[in-house]
Image 1 (cartoon, rainbow, N blue to C red):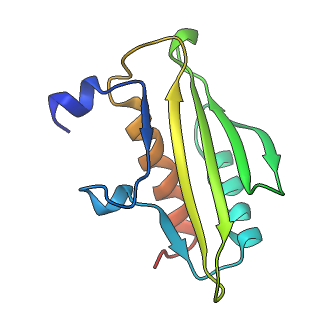
Image 2: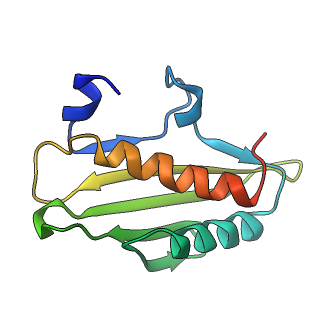
Image 3: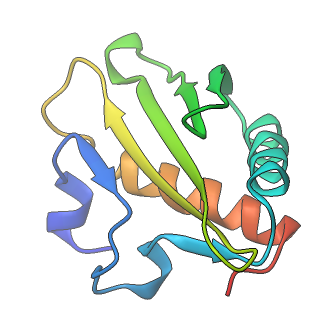
Length: 124
C-alpha cells in the first residue's frame, strides 16, 4: 500500500475500472438471497462490524464498523443486485465519519468484507 493509499480520502468504493482487479465489483453465480446470506455471515465474522439494516427491496445492507476512537468509525453500504442468467453482483462503499483522512481504513474494510464473502462463495 503506497503513501497515497495510506493517507487516502475518507471513503473507498468498488469500481468496475479499478486498476486492482480485487477491488472491482464481484459477480457470483448465485441468487441475490444467497449472496446476501453470505454477506451477512461475513459481517458477523468481522470484528467490530455490525449490521444496522437490510433493505430487501434495494438489496442494501447498511453496516457500521466501530473503531477505538469514535470519530473514526465507518459506515459501509453493500449493494447486492440480481442480474440475468442467475448471476448476482456485489458492490460496496466504505465512508469514515468525522474525519477527512482514513489512513487506508476504508480500503481495508472493502478488502476484509470481499475476502470474507469470497471464502464463502467463489466469485466469477
